[in-house]
Length: 324
Image 1 (cartoon, rainbow, N blue to C red):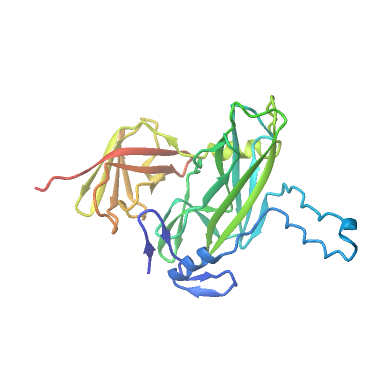
Image 2 (spheres, one colour):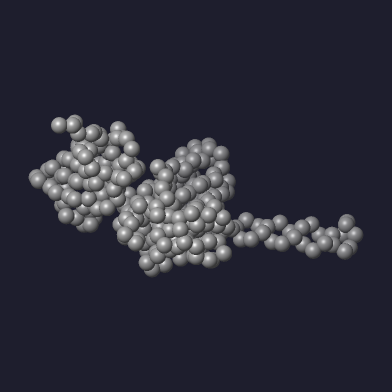
């Protein structure tokens, strides 16, 4: 049984782990787990209050105040999550890149912005000082996973999800700025386990940039894995139960046999790998119409990914073939 909405899918392929650790079958249990799973905080726990003083009030020491914490790592079930930054400082008027790093246990995976037939995309919620703003996730091109016959889109092993944060031009030199993130993810194997984490990093505002020696290059590498916006012309045509995409690609463009397609527009294409063929510069893709299709979108947005390297994000007009 699959539980879906227009924008997301929530399902455990077989059973789901509740916060108490018990495995419960069925997609409804996954929804319950996502709602009830306790937050895991990367901040150090607040020190317990001092015991009640027995001396006169005037002689009692003031209660200890918890100091700031800059830890940004969570050891969660089947995944280690960490907030990392490309730079050690923030420069007024510039963009700083941060990323949520997920390291999965072997055979476990998390999800892309469209999780496929089941799953839940990783969600990031930033808390930033006034004047600072976070952009969209630069989603790397996903991989395809088969889970009990369901097509899932996401990431195994390690993934970095880069996000640009705009530093206001009015940021004061020398100020210490907290970068806070609340994240939720879902990891799946034969079962699905939801996870949460709260992270805080601190960065000082400086006139001069200072790349982080550990994370500047990895974040740049993962940014480069985001699909490139392709200006290829084309169209998508619905004819019966099939959708045909006709794309004009460069002569040195990708080989048909190496390609996979990941839909972004919801409830239009099935998530199974479509058929590809190419004749000269015309690439043809045949995909089955989604069982959840209700009305034609104005445009069909999707990602093409090549096994030989490279990924492209496209948006083409969508039309319905005229009846004979």
